[in-house]
Length: 355
Ligand SMILES: [Zn+2]
Image 1 (cartoon, rainbow, N blue to C red):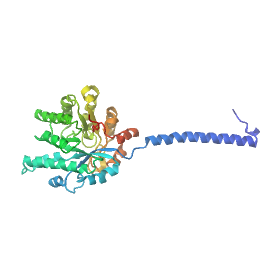
Image 2 (image 1 turned 30 degrees about the horizontal axis):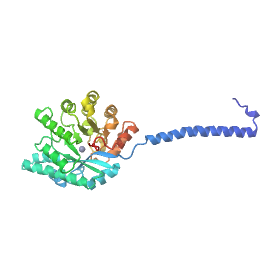
Image 3 (image 1 turned 90 degrees about the vertical axis):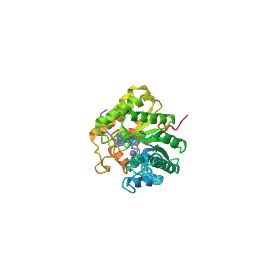
Image 4 (image 1 turned 90 degrees about the horizontal axis):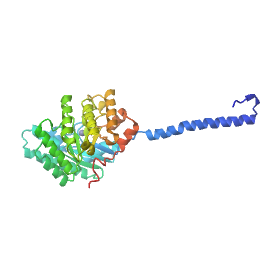
């Protein structure tokens, strides 16, 4: 309807003005209200319920490595871990990884150490981790550490579970120089994985080995998939750093992609509980000389995590100061994806409802 403005009385003008103002107000509200709602649901969670990758080390171990008080060294007490990391990420819980497997390396290079001394040191370190976590049992979840290639690996797993009540297992394939193409080592790793199934023990595995060519890591993952992940039922594994090491370069995207493909096709693997953590992926410029974060790597990361499913992804600080800020800074996916990861309590991985 067209309005002849010359024929409008002041009363009508007021009425028309009021209608126009109401209309503008309505449009304004309509434009603003949903926006406020969208912002609310899309704001990035600023705390992470579970820090799924933290380390602790005894002063004795750091002294033996010459790293006591060195910058970047792991905390030497539960209190320091909480103060330096969990308060920053607002985490209610943290998986705390024993550094016991490092004693195997330290004692091997210190030729004066006997193998009996190595076992004593490994046990000392696992005891230390359990004791520290027991100071904050509602917050800290202790994972034992062991070099899977040592003769005492199985007995130390049993001791830590049965006597210390430790709740998971940390394996560091790079630190322990695991080579799955060696048949003897493959059998040792199988035995350790079978023991983890026996104890219903979640395992956090640092799988990627830097310092090798990409083929090495790809071959290792192929063997792990063919001989372990698709053969042993009841496994519960989180792959540290999304199967790699720092950032998200090749071969990490290759090994993660192999894991995703196998997971889509193999029934045993689908029934196993397999997760990844995204610790150290966004490390980038936090540390001088660290791996660069490139647009291509971030795109690979997004695509793979989307295929894998964000509900099977954990965030972990890996004791990197500023890592949560760096995760925000570089986060390449939807905010809702981040919020799903930040809210993950790890209940399924930690097998908190064991029969
Ligand atoms: Zn770590």
